[in-house]
Image (cartoon, rainbow, N blue to C red):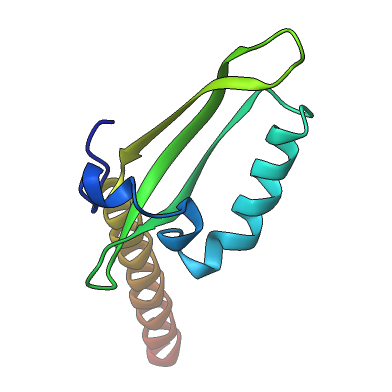
Length: 118
């Protein structure tokens, strides 16, 4: 098992995945995994605040889950779950949105002050 964002491999081996899934993402994650286990899909990918660190902080991840091999009866033998830490990317997107919002407010106020001067 490779290191996961925010958790040590040894620690992850002792936890159920629902224990380190952010509460805001838990129901959606359970539904996606149920569809996957039922064979409705061969895998899925999504962005989420999946990893809750022991200190309570979160890590944004891009997750990919796929079935690598099934036996003749269709039982999963191997699953692959990759989690890429995208916290920096998500913070950059949030900062960009905030910057754009601030810019829009400043332009609106500037236009308003110009209209008052006319």
